[in-house]
Length: 308
Image 1 (cartoon, rainbow, N blue to C red):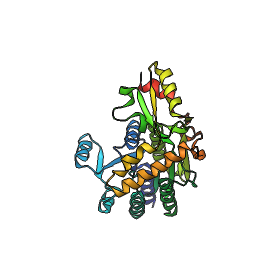
Image 2 (image 1 turned 90 degrees about the vertical axis):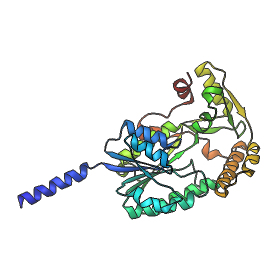
Image 3 (image 1 turned 60 degrees about the vertical axis):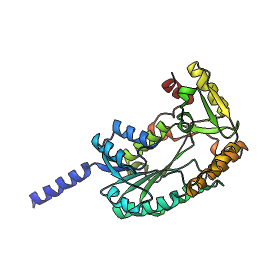
Image 4 (image 1 turned 180 degrees about the vertical axis):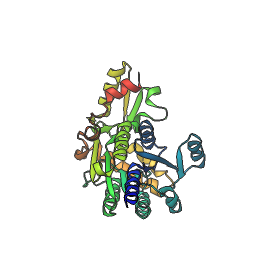
């Protein structure tokens, strides 16, 4: 009897010490790639699995010693193998209206596979926004919450990198553009989003289950951002201030219906922002501090780290 009980204790100890397996969806994207980097710095208690839709990237990751799988949100037949033995999922969908269908199917598959925790990257929602893709994210998160799985939602405001890391990048041109005139916006950097996500994935649902984290570090106009970057670097950095009407011609030529629907929603966002009708998004709410114990990265700090 003593031996049997000792074996049970040993087995429980081994189970407790077993690393939780995390699946990173969107691992090669702007935010997802930062999440991967953060977990490569510190993956204590985790076993990390990367996912991609591309065979060549899969081969590269595996050659580099990473655990990697094919997962295509438009191909549910890829879900089972990707989710096998996974405990936690970082869920990031593409910028199309297909996020509704994709997310529902992925959540269903995750529940069937025994996943315990979904960390979802959404938007800086008030839950009352009259913006289609904000509403889509609200519905996705409501479905995740109803699934019975543990969940954590991360809500970033305008991701600065989407404007600064362009083609060509700000570092080369000393300029960037905004499409909402001189209206104020809340800003956050992808590196902070990723560090928060990585911490949530490491620390798990016991600490972060049922939490909504809102990330908006500064509220600034495009020209104010340009002035801060210029003063921090000693360079003449300019902001090309445009209105949302400049996107209309581009949107009309998008052949994909789901992508066009998303961009039409983005146009609504910019029109509301320019008109000063996004009060819920023009606030500072820094849950980088809540999760990491430090404030989010400021424009000045980012400029000194990346532009000098």
